Image (cartoon, rainbow, N blue to C red; front, side):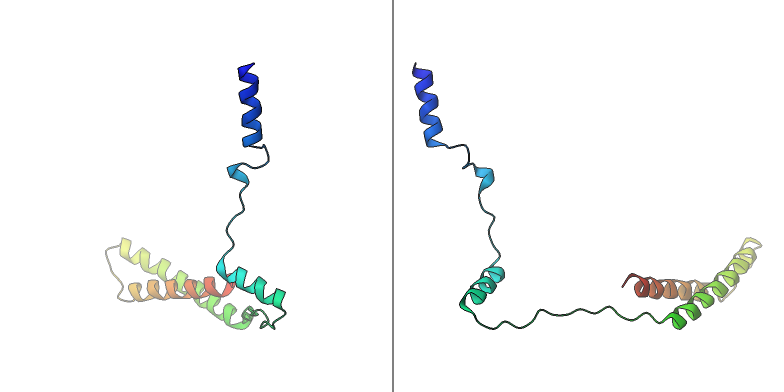
Length: 110
């Protein structure tokens, strides 16, 4: 009898629908201010528009062609390194390849 009474009291004190997990998440201050401004009827500036950059296809093709030529040159230069010769332009070509690939990656991913 006592156990039933304690369960009844526990159910009354802690209703099933009001657990800690169901608390409201805090609203960020900027969102609160925006909602208040809309409710008051004040004019808000339009949201910022972000436009994607236009990809210049001709420039990308030129860079891809240059990258291909550099890769061929570096491949021949690596063959020279294997024979004990170190071409002076190898580091410059490798750096140029890194720059071109970085630029291409940026242009394509935007």
